[in-house]
Image (cartoon, rainbow, N blue to C red; front, side):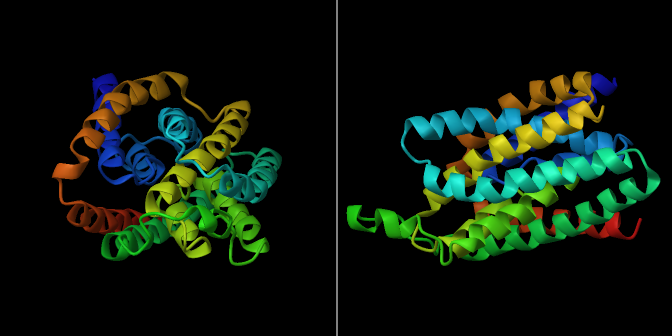
Length: 263
């Protein structure tokens, strides 16, 4: 019975990701903790690889169409990957199953969900403000951040958040990219966000796997549900009021984040 429930949960999260582009971690991790009673460290580790595999297909598709700005991906990865490795080293030193570490994970996850809720609401209200296209002469300017250090700093923050909570590479990442690269069209911002999330979640997920924090059978069941869910969600994306879904989603994430903080 649990097997079917995991597939249904994966399918639900896949539909939401397909409809809104919001990272699966912000939904899947609290679902695993609250509804299935999975330990926080196991939920985070499993969800990191879940996110990596689900976003890999999207990255390949967007790269083939030339939407991914690899310069932006490289700048963010230069901050996020080292931060993820440092966080994993800290988790290995302290032990992921340690009570204090699990408390840190749930509290940080709560804060990350509240930030994601705010970012999701921001996108719902002001998601159309990014330019739709750039001219050939603006290409280099559009992929240059306001300051060279900002992608490294924000990348490090997201890398730490993702490694601790599996949340941060979705709605938070898109919002950060919109602030750092205001001339970059929204489709390319989304493509860059999905592309840089793949190596980050793979590195963090592999690190958690080495610590024994991945439930492989559960991961397989979640993917069995999420992959058709993402296809279905993206298929109906243009027919559903995105602003309404994002607004409702932000309320749900805020509720889950608050509950985690006061646990």
